[in-house]
Length: 407
Image (tube, rainbow, N blue to C red; front, side, top):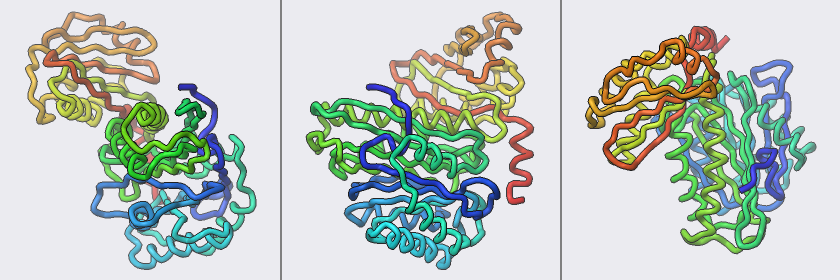
């Protein structure tokens, strides 16, 4: 696998564009378009929140019941959630505008929105933005990057990744972009993710690869414990790499899935590290577990603990909070057998052994916890399974950002 520069335009046949439509923001782009030169097979995973935004409902219809998709239109600033029939109608009007501009079927246009809940979209601005983007679609790296910037809300950095692998003697590329900073919690998050590939793969295998991979990537991210109304990850495959079609779980499928996992893991970690107000990416690894489920439960419990997140912000090796969060997770383990380590670029330190303090140096622990990426590793000594969850520290700025988000 080769890591390459780029995002949604890295794979053959994909183009992108961005536009300033003034949906909510001024003096910045707030719409993005992704377009494939040929129809794509589409897979998707969506929020588990009962309250689903109109674009989620629209995309589920396309992904589940239509044979192909060829374009994605996304806006930032307004979520088009809790907007009733009018909001759903705006999804159709957006798709109609894209279909006319691109000369494709409206039922091959996926739509996505992110931003404030409860507001109606300014559909005239949306339609004008669609027309403008259709005229400047480009397959270069820069166009993909501009699209990644356009979907940001409280994000502070654009998020994209791309890799290449060889399948059946052909070079296959997978690239993606996402947004997400707040209202982020496992079971998908306030996040939008768009992944494109030129791989030739059946729709069934494409959906299975995405659904399985989401469990270990985006569903292992939490910033604040809030599961959004708009969470969507779309995976489009146009087959232009011309590799032998992947139709079963053989070696080619595993190579594809490994590349997809790299892209999704990279994007997931970008979301966690860019959590609203965050100063550090906080990674939690549970090792030595009896089962994967046990490791997942424990890692998620620690990464979502507000007290632990606050301690990470204060560079405080308050290991009792971590052990406590593991204890109320619902997973069974023996706290008197747990070893806990903190690790970062500044080094690694063993904090507790068999459930009690090692007498570690607080000064050294603080140094390790002062980096912008920190890992807690808990060995529960029950087996060979493990899991990793990603989050961030909890800062004063998180409250400030969300206290006046609508303004």
